[in-house]
Amino acid sequence: MHPMFTLYYAAHTCSLASHIALEDAGADYDLHRIALATTQQQSADYLAINPKARVPALATPRGVLTETPAMLAFIAQSFPQAQLAPLDDPFAFAELQAFNCYLCSTLHVAHAHRMRGHRWAYEESSFADMQRKVPDSVGACYELIETRMLRGPWVMGERYSIADPYLFTLAQWLEDDGVDPARIPGVIAHRARMAARAQVQQAIAQELTGSN
Image 1 (cartoon, rainbow, N blue to C red):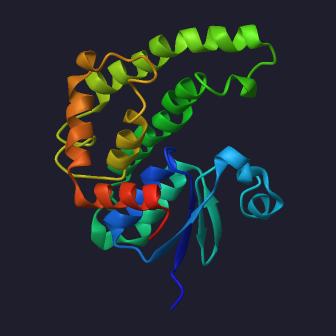
Image 2 (tube, rainbow, N blue to C red):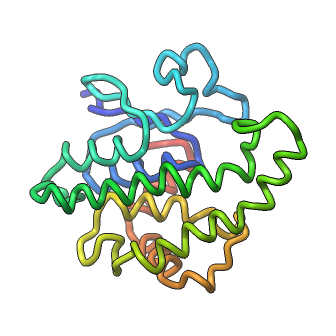
Image 3 (cartoon, rainbow, N blue to C red):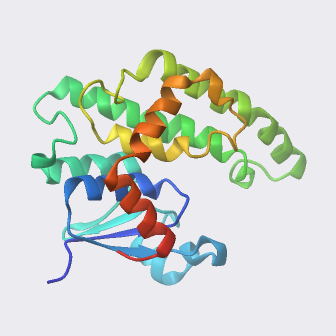
């Protein structure tokens, strides 16, 4: 029987968050690796799937979804028995969505200024200035998460949710972004807590080997 979902992903990208969530949910899915190094994301075949030329994308029986917060919410709502979100509490679910939207719209965008300055400017000198800003802009995001958002032991408190794989995924990159981990012990402890989960280890292993 053909799997219900196909996750289009690339290793070492934010697609890992949705991959972990699919594992958490016990979903039946296939993986399709997109080779960013050869700009496969700009190929006609992939543009037909995701005209944004980005990963991740999730093919479902009803069509293709993009944008990590939307994909994570869809996974949580499609597998309510996995209890990956407070689906019975509109305010708590909105708080969860707010956290994931902050990661998507602010933290990830600040991080991308380190290597994707061409999205925002033309001049090489502008790229260098953006890169200099990254430790401060990304660091400020993590300090806000540390002091105001991360409730512990999981992002939303005692209950694990789709916010946890998303924060874990982006936190893989914080040292390369120039953020001092000693300043955000809660985020670092959360990252270690996530790394110990079997579902996380499974998803990372699959991405490194390129297999389900």
